[in-house]
Image (tube, rainbow, N blue to C red; front, side, top):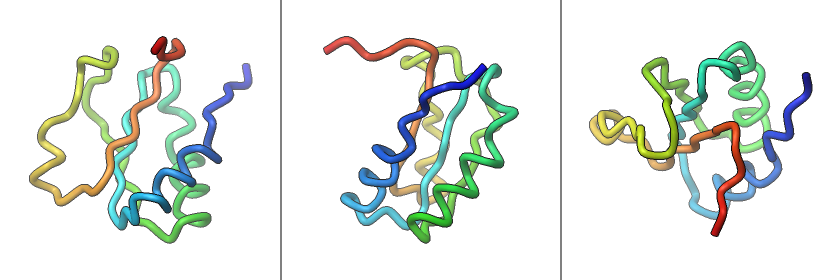
Length: 84
């Protein structure tokens, strides 16, 4: 199954925020793609990409511990689209 991860939007956000260190958080079903996502984002932005290996049970499951790692931006993927 192919997913639309909107990586172009993520690249744009990383550049806009001038983020040097980015943490990506993926639900279990998307974790097999973590290395591919990380490599593409690093290649297109030059940022250091960290992969959060902890839980990701939805938008309320933010890894607050990343603040101690000096992360400039957290990108979280889920299975449903945000409704504004």
